[in-house]
Image (spheres, rainbow, N blue to C red):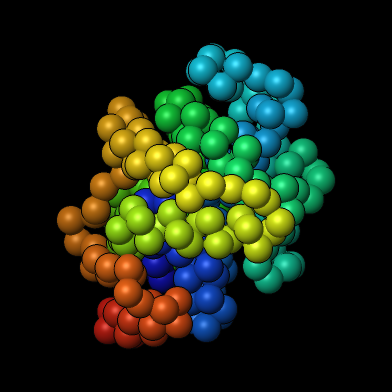
Length: 221
């Protein structure tokens, strides 16, 4: 069974999806890491983030793979592990430009669908998993939270890594990214019509995990 978990930035999709996959014994696919890997390569090449053609060219050259022997799976960019570098503020900002390029989205969606065929017991998270990538998934979840709460979580996450960040700046970035994600022409952020929406604003991560597991058990054969 494929379980999709979609939602805007800062709702805890990655950590929740990872835990749900572990509890079920399923594979975990962090699709955001794929866009971040392209963004990291673009930063390394000093690319113009406003140039969609240049970003598309870089994406075609990238080889993004997952080491499925690890839990959670490790991310490899051109054969080298880069998981430690994908969550920085700079990569996060660059990823928002990468994600709106149609050619990049098409390339990565096809790769995600290939992974879904190879690993049919999968928990996958992103912005368009239940609407575009796996529209026939048996269980679809959409996580949400207020922008203020999402900014607070993101600030705490970055500060825990030793980064110096400003709450208002992060909040503005989140609001800007929400707008770009929901208005882009290809794979916009949207609630799948058959998804269960969970507002995580006042929930702990564990509470969210348990609610998702309850929903999964309700649809499991």
